[in-house]
Length: 70
Image (cartoon, rainbow, N blue to C red; front, side, top):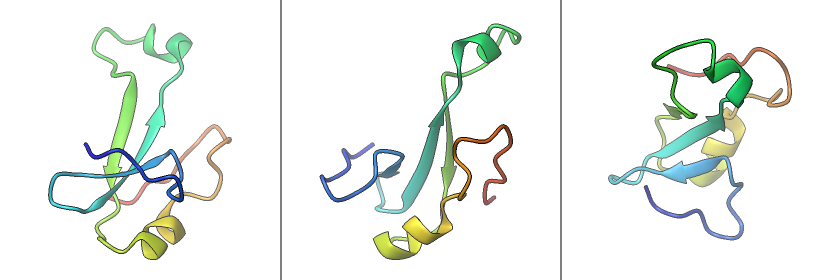
């Protein structure tokens, strides 16, 4: 994964072909409930345009449920 630039939010990064990806850390207390849980959840936003990617990010990142694009 490429490192985000200073003007790109930390929860956005690009994959090897330049498509923006949304990432969210899974709290340790939740990961402990599953034997194969990953520490980070990644979802492709399906765009190479940064402004579009920012608009596609789920708006309630601090909530309990995220409806992520598939």
